[in-house]
Length: 287
Image (cartoon, rainbow, N blue to C red):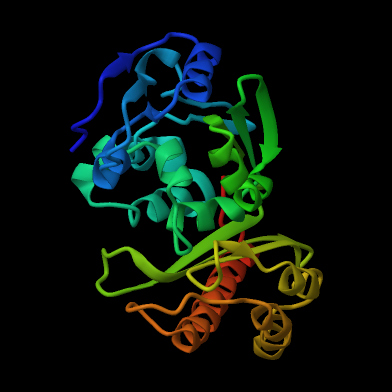
């Protein structure tokens, strides 16, 4: 409950919304509201409603899909262009974020800001070609991977996420997403995503990401480099993953020990690599 809220603002300009939050003590952006209500911050006094900022639409072109930060998670799943993107990678990942009722309420921006180490949406976005826009209040653009690395700084400066621009994968690219949870529809304990582009029978582009195996969802750059241009058979996958996984620091909690998470991460990323490569070499489109 938000028992101590005294002031409500509903600006229609992004710069006004950011200025209000950055200059007002105990103020917060109000998007879907699920996370704010769950936190129940007793010091919260001011909410700045984002409904009138015009950042809640999905726009698709031949080259990219633009996703407003106020887009609901369920709208992300239901949109036909998102459902086709990367063989359904992003839509499938979004389905693990919350229950259906909370996905109708929660927004893409809110989910990314409050994401935990095993967040499936963040993990899936890491293997796509994504540019993120945020306001401080001037609009800045950054690769999605940079946002993940510096998310805490953006939270501390009270920046506002405004948009994601997702480039459509090449025709010879394919993606895969693997999940381990307490139940088939539960939030992931560990998840893995892979995007591979095939060229002349070999992987030309390889992007791999894990959630729940480190302090935040993370790319496996060393493994990507070792697999690029090489036929990803069992031995090469094992050789590529060993040094990459050795650098991870998995959480250790009631859902799984660090050792368990790391072991499951290896299983899931192997499956994702194999599935993505099989689809890419068959020419299954990822757009």
